[in-house]
Amino acid sequence: MALYTRHLPAWKRREVSEIKRLAGEYAAVGLVDMYGIPATQLQQIRRNLRGIAVVMMTRNTLMEHAFSEMGGSMGDLQKHISGQSALIFTNENPFKLFKLLEKTKTKMAAKPGEIAPEDIVVQKGPTSFKPGPIVGELQQAGIPAAIEGGKVRIRETRTVVRRGEVISRKMAEVLAKLDIRPMDVGLMVQAVHYGGTVFTPDLLAVDEQAYFNNIMLAAQQAFNLSVNAAVPTRLTASALIGRAVQEARNLGVEAGIYEKGVVDLIIGRVYRETLALALAAADAGFELEESARRAVEAAAAAPVTAAAPAAPAEKEAAPEEEKEEKEEKEEDEESGIAGLGALFG
Image (tube, rainbow, N blue to C red; front, side):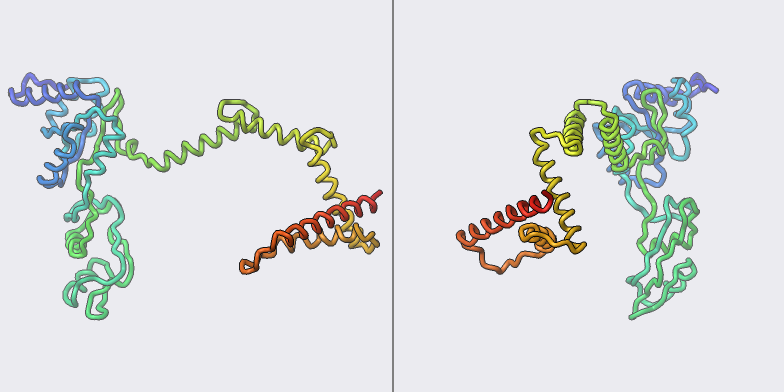
């Protein structure tokens, strides 16, 4: 039902007009709950928001009048007015505003009758309390406590209030003594109107890291899909070409096509297959020629040699010794290949 200001006193009409004026000047109009904010903290919040946002405190009924007169999607803000609502005007987008206001929050002690915003947990361990009535107070609040070493100690970690439950007077007093401050105090966003849409806190509380990870995952999956489906794009063209080159080489090796860039792979494959066959023949008891036997023994010892760690304290070989070892190695490889060639015709 539309509300009109004709019957309102002059100062209330001016207040409604001011709300409408600010709503027309700023891109975003929000409702924030100011319940429990001390005056000093509110002043600090105002200073921190200077140049970014304007906070206006007025009566809830006057907000309803203003929103009703503006109509349209702005009128939807009326249903979010509750408690000690105040108005906030800014040109920032709702997500940035929500994040900014979250930073203004501080932890405060709980008051009797308040609702726990999250599970309140008391951790086990020593306290600064000396033996006395505090032990009974803790136990009455459901917190297991005992005296150890002349101090009060909490014997086990316990959740004393679940999220959404009312905090009793006794529990509030105990939490205050333990210096546990579970209440977030600051400008709590109730709703923000921006671009014809009303955003609520559940939509604005975005986990930025999770959002970023999802974007990265989507990008990787899109890249893989493009490559697997052979859809060339500016980002996947090089991967597609590399894949095609590799597949062409593999085909050349499998088909025995003697082309540049494939011949060495074919020779390497033939050598490995020949060596494997020689190893199988040796295991079956066949007598091999000396050169073939040396090649088989070298191949059999290769994994062990490669796995053996180098001795760091060992003296470096002299240039002449390195040259001799290199010549011997080349001679062994040549004789081994020649022996395999002789063995298999």
